[in-house]
Image (cartoon, rainbow, N blue to C red; front, side, top):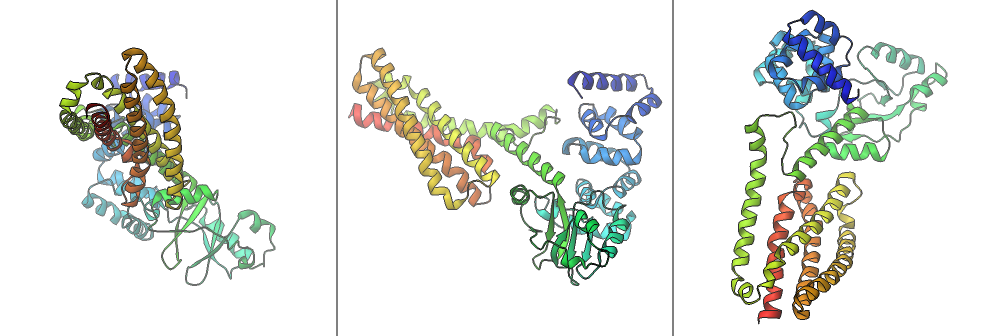
Length: 449
């Protein structure tokens, strides 16, 4: 939909709610895609959200529920009674049901679980035990698995019987008698094979399983590297537990991107739909406080060089340039490293090579910027010695900032902290503090003393 159509539809829904024309609104919603309804819900106030969601049939409502952002989903779930929630959960795949029940109060989740069929209940309970950011937390248990001793005819019958519970069958997973993953076979190979052929002779044993406790980012790296439409999930002994499909991987990539952008901008995990002034302030204030204390430390560093600044007042003019350039270089370097770590293009094995490359880039850029600054200061102040010292200080600050920009994400990743954090106040504050200290130290030694 174009923005104009979005706006028109949203206004139409709001008008129907205001006029209490709920039958007409319900009829209108029947022709709107669940993903579009979810988007519109995120833009409505709480009362309107409740009215619209109540008008949806159970099948549509369940599809809409899984499309909602976390913030809007929490709002909607908070308005549902247990029976309505149970009806919706019953229509969801196991992974989606686990995500929804993981968002409600434990006692409510327990009551809803008791209403589910025994097999679905067992699957959802198992999924709820896994960390939400692991392969187990994003996998679904709906799949088609067959033993390698079965014939093609028997496997096709199994696929037919599983069609109702498995929405998309990308591959049939082949296991041994103990449930250990042995390979996979495509629908194409099944159709082309003779009915009495053993599936074990058709399977591709070169599968790329992911372990159930693997981090979701690593799962995405594997699926992208090997162009997997679906990845089997196994336990430590190789037993098949579930699968992760391409749409799950896309959801993870979107989630990680939004989280990283939040850290970069200093807003944490705040969602655009979280419109409350208090909530927005609560998400942002820790980063602003960190920046405030970083600024105070920078001021304290400058106060330690008061005599130098009084002796050569021109030094103070260039403090903003030094800190700004250092911050820019640090952010550029850390952006390259964070992106490389996120995509798997950078590993600890080539960290030394990456640091050397960034230092080379920083040295070249620093030399060119220093030359420009030397000419400007000399033309302005007619002091060649001062211009050379300030430009040399800029070069050193740029080199140090580049090292910080490369090292910070690698160190944070090593201690299991999201390296996107290094894109926020950490890099900026550290560069400001070290930049001021290095600049004034060099100037004091070479000019004052």
